[in-house]
Length: 208
Image (cartoon, rainbow, N blue to C red; front, side):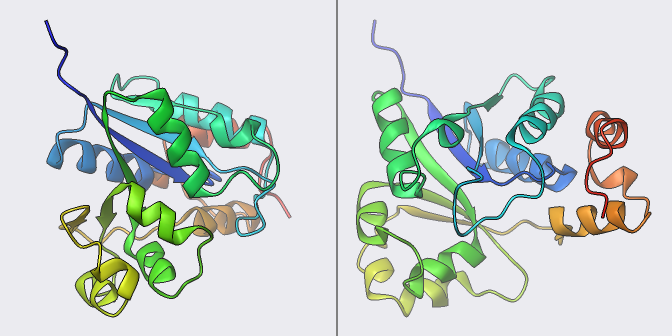
């Protein structure tokens, strides 16, 4: 009996820290796009385009705490284990296609990253777009269809590989905002899971 291919979303971010918006985004995408799994993929601290503010160990611990009660959510350390220069999304997606050759994979990203690709700011963007499918979440003030139409690379591959999703609700609280609140003695308790809030407090993270 042939096993039906699974639909898997690859959700990369610094997760520094993971927030309730990250979880809500992953849950919304999984529900609307009928994903079987969402892989939470923390970005490497060696990436020149994503500076992290705490150690890989702390970020990993918080992700595991945040997703432990959802069987559709899976943690993967791939980008934390590869050599410098191999953490680009192009390499990452090739890795996961090799890991899950029978399944249908999607890279989950925000519309701001779509704009960056349209503006030529990504490495290996041609191969990345040619070889993969994408679920793209709306961001305030960004016209996703316009971003695709003005980029020759994107519009020439607009064959269904870009699945555009309106959130239906404006939720733009960022990890940066939460870090700033912690560093200035604020109280961002309800913007992230209780387990992660407690972990940050116990380990005195994000203090100036």
